[in-house]
Amino acid sequence: MTPQTKTVRRATTDEYGYGRNRRKLVVALEKGDLITLREQGRRTRHTARLFDVYWWLLRCEADKARMEKLRERKARKAAQLEERRQRTAKRAGPQQADDSWTPRGK
Image (cartoon, rainbow, N blue to C red; front, side):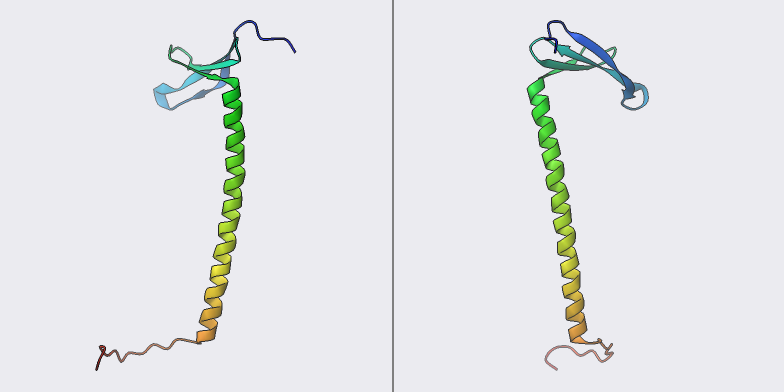
């Protein structure tokens, strides 16, 4: 691999944003393992260390896997609860509508 000695800038192929705020992004890999993002035609830059971006990506993947496990656990719990409700309803027998309502104590 060639070591990074010069800044390398590239523009994205797609535009991001909506309406007249749609712009391409310019990505710069800078010396010192930095990555800089800015909108094309704008001066405001956002810089981060590559290691921080890498760590953030790993956290996102871990969070995604954890959320998937939680969704599966939630679905399993919902199925168990529904099964328990049906067993309880089956055990109680059919409910009959009783039109003779009386207040308590009478």
